[in-house]
Amino acid sequence: MSKTFVLIHGTWHGGWAWNAVARELSSSGHYPHAPTLAGHGPNTNRAGITHKDCVDSVSAYIRHHQLKDIILLGHSFGGSVVQKVAEQLSDRIRSVVFLDALILADGQCVFDNLPPEYVAAFNDLASSSTNNTMLIPWEIWRDNFMQDAPESVARSIWEQLTPEPNQVNLDKLDLKRFYSLGVPKSFISCRQDKALPEDYFHPRMSSRLGHFKLLEMDGSHEVMFTRPVELAEKIVEASFE
Image 1 (cartoon, rainbow, N blue to C red):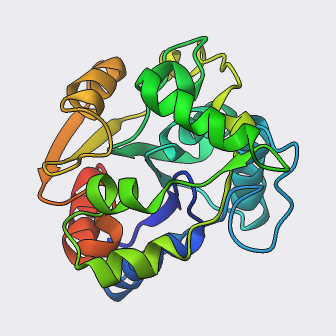
Image 2 (cartoon, helix red, strand yellow):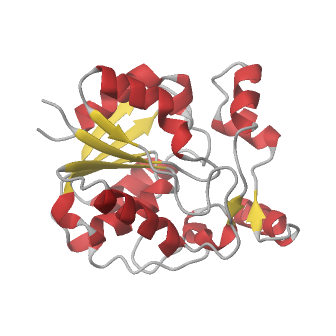
């Protein structure tokens, strides 16, 4: 049965990050959508972008394309975005999938869920920029985010990343409605993910979901680039019949 997927990217990425996965989903008869969050991707204004702007851009995309019965997936930072989108459009969403994603507790911001050394480094990078943005250093990307790819491939992807509006990491989120929703939830855990310390994504983040479907696969944090075929299969498996 064909399914409609809305794939939400993480920090520094754009909708382009899902190209290979979207091709796999399409070839299997599904309908993938991969919008780029407000203030993300190339050639866009990043100044003053808030977390709400990111959420509203996804909701507007879903409404504009008249999408219904959606499997909504968030990767990394995108997890916090789909939490709020699920609140806004619960009547359009069939299930929510988190791919090694940040799942915030009510009243938290993204930086409340990162190691202090990451927060300090990102804030330093943002404060030294002209528009309160920050980009992950190459060495951290190579060693912790995409360490399972040849260095040339990892660098080619890193060169496509764009600076992140730092305000999105500081905005506190009211998530009471999200935690009251009965929408089915799944979590895909990547065994070689080193972007955050061990157990950060699962079970630390995933346990906040209460009852959820857990799937595991090999791969780094950037599994959409390194294992797109396997990831597409897991995404379909993670969606509920």
